[in-house]
Image (cartoon, rainbow, N blue to C red):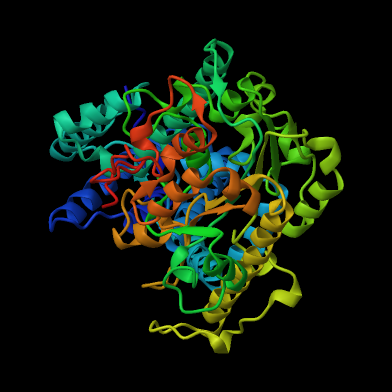
Length: 568
């Protein structure tokens, strides 16, 4: 029996509803005219029942304890609401599996830069002001409101309220332990719960737990790999440079209007550097891309990335000395098993298998990482057959922190954009262009390090970055729900292959194959196939039809992204 002698404050109850509804209003799906009103009504009723049940339970504790508990609970709900609204406004992203991952895995450097770039901004202050006004209104109205009985005393309202509670509580059946089963159940019963942020958070939590399962499976794939691997390349070094957040439409190597890549463009004009014109990333997150392009399993295959040995391990098996030098994840950050996107490398069953060497600290600027490598080069490299991975900070936000002062060539006044950008926004674009200019210097410097060796150097970015390209948006968003045009700027990436004169002289057929393939469409989930092809790796995981430089290459008519959408 419900204790009807207790009463609740309707203003406090309404405050919970408003706090929970605010993120929902920014997440409305408007593809059909009826979707937004249905989702809004459902969520108001859903959160109304939730808030009523919460207030009813708290009211049983007594007046003094009740106020304390509501203060604590509203602080938690407000933190959830504010953070969600902030992410939705700034990045068109809400709490999901990837947001949880970024939060749990981000390092101190990224946190500091994120705070200075986004938290201390006018939109954030506006959001906080709105919530302060909400709580001020709650205090003022709450003191004047007449408390309501927990349960209606009249028959018709009581019956209606009971039915409503049963229906809303019945929605908990969709909060099952299996992500796919939950989605299928929602689709089968056509429940509006899929438009509810709480349900999405539940699904995301299950997804994040799935990430951890993937890492365990990846470890098993490495430990159980017994294939005898051979490699026809006996001399050449291979340098793989992975950039960060490089939107190729901001580069004059492609269709960018600013001179952001003078050094690499000069190399391309000289003939030693090949620029591929139609390469895309399979996702706009570092974590997801690294997992996918390190694995010989591609997006859309029947198995997952973690069900095959990662290609660095396969290269080690055929005699290559594999080195990983990252300016994002090293030092104390490398001690975390699942740290900052790349931490799965440090899982006990993965890290020791895939690298012979990796660095132990990061630097303010990428060139400092390269200088550190040069100092330790004799202790790192083998006499021949080195496979070296440089992972740069590239153009990662905050862009102004990605380059030294001497590379601040572009100013806000230099930015010509058809959008009505403010001076601050033009400054953001200028910072990004300067970071791209510095990245040009860094990549060119790495190429110079190996230009007198028998070496091939490959550069691409893990993903792109939107920088006020066609709308007032900066950064990366949720591509599942965002404008399809966002895919172009967040996934179109540079892809370059440099061959040293000595390598070209000894491998004329490979150079010609590279030259003929620069206009073929490609996605980086098949990166291992290109590497296996160039190095002549003989493994059951090599598929010539997926190597963009191979004469047997079959371009995908529609490149399927990790989020389920089609790029083409």
